[in-house]
Length: 268
Image (cartoon, rainbow, N blue to C red; front, side, top):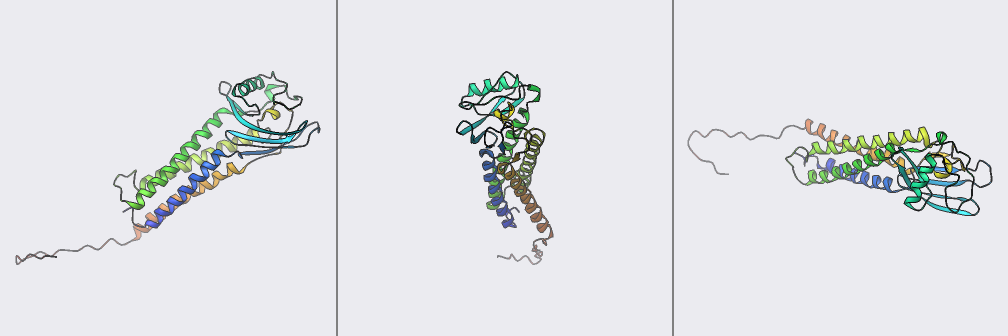
């Protein structure tokens, strides 16, 4: 019965809720990539930049103090994305097209600078397929985490008869969450290793106005997924331990009714 060893099920509820909270935090925060931007000509002080899957932020010194919000922009026909400093959707699309085709000298508004990298073959962008896959798998992981928590509550309070609603379902949802989290970490980690560690795919680094080479790292928003991964693995472990303990328990005693040979009816 699912209510046997109830504390194990209750523990999975707590861990699943924690995993969901951390997944949401990872998804909406802007610290998947953090970096320092340096001016190759040494004219400006280093700038700090961070961004997530959707938005980011940059603070630095140009002609004056610059404080800009950034947004992810993708051109799916070219399978590229970048973190843009433009403020309008149309401007971001135009900026990305110009950068891909090498026809831009400078992109960010209200900032003076000179592009050093005009060869489009040397420019590095975020792979749009990896970005979309990361978002989709993270959404599936979030849904699986929510379902794992909901079905754990059901199993802690009732005895469902359908296997997918019962303890088997807890294995399924936590297993899906583990797989999706691992895929996101591999996808984004490989993207960082292949591209973002040398060039963070930000407007000013793509044009060569600033450089982030050797100055970028994966941020806390990314590493939160490692905790999420461990939480769902812990849930699977708890379910496995619970099943093992149940298998070791002696079967409940059975009452054998003796045959009544003298026709007397016993009332209890």
